[in-house]
Length: 130
Image 1 (cartoon, rainbow, N blue to C red):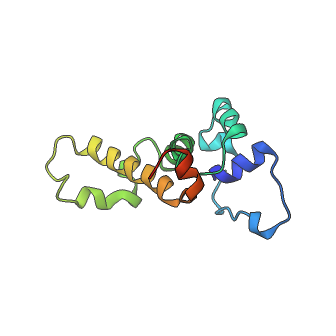
Image 2: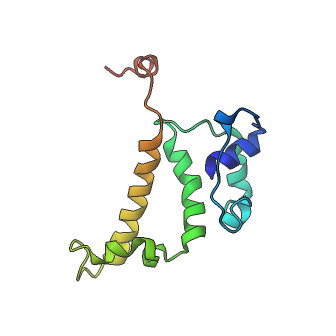
C-alpha cells in the first residue's frame, strides 16, 4: 500500500507491467485517509524514496499507521495474532499485552527491512562498509 500511495503522490504512472502494483481488494484500501494517513503522511510520501535498507524505518512509520487503522488499536487481540497469546513466553505475564504489541510491531518493522533490496557493492563502499 505504501508503494502504491508513494507512486500516486509522486505522480509515477507507467504502462510498464513491471511497474504495475496489485492491490488487495479490501474496503477503503485505495483511500489513504481511511487507512489512517494524515496530511503529514501524504507529504512524506511525496519525497519517500523506494524502499531500501537505509530508509525502511521511514516506510515503517507510514506502514504502522495503516497497520493500526486496518487491524484496530487493540491489534494484539486480532485473530491474525492469536498465536502470540498461546506462546509460553507470554503466558501468565502481567505485561503480556504490552510485550505482544511490541513483538508484533518489531516483527513487522523487521519485515520492511527484510523485503528491502540489499545494497549494491558501490553503496556499501560509499558508506564505509567492508
